[in-house]
Image (tube, rainbow, N blue to C red; front, side, top):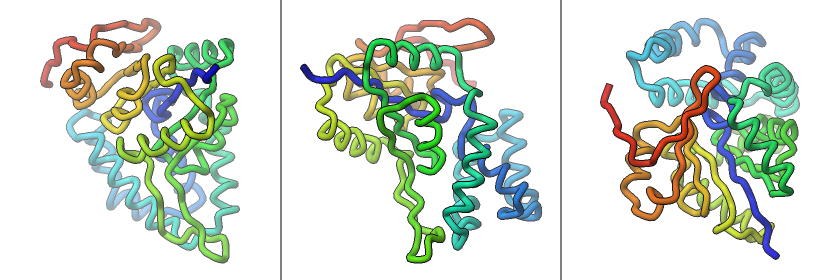
Length: 243
């Protein structure tokens, strides 16, 4: 028999934040990223997002660009040391719904995969904490001296998550019709579209619109919204209000 699997995005799906932004704050503490850079290039954008005047994509794009620029030339062993601290202090900051779903899949003997746009040195540690079978993240490529080269192989868009799933399908012999996928943004659309049980957790407006544009996906998708101590289960064609 083929294996049943559960494919999880991490940021905003399991984790109530972004692993990269948590790691960014640690890098500030270790002065790999300077306070001058933070206040001149990030602070205003971050505050606008926190107050819901700005867009999250603008914030995360700014963070990721500065992140990669400042990590170039840093030894990967040191980055792994900081990653250990980041995950150890943050890994339990997850949605209760996602924690329950992870436990359910583990109890059922399902394979669990994390496919995330966050750096692979963070994703690997998060995967270990939650007993994931395997993982894929954005690869930060080292040079011949084991320092970060400045080159990455990204994993935050739908196309690359599709390719990652194809690799896992070949490796683990998975029954997609019986499998599950969990995501929150348009970057997770390919994962949700491929499985028989797609679940969007606190989805963005863009993801909801994309789900509704595909007849098959709209019919089978579940929407879970966690607020305070309640999880709301909604139809995929729920009315979208422009704020």
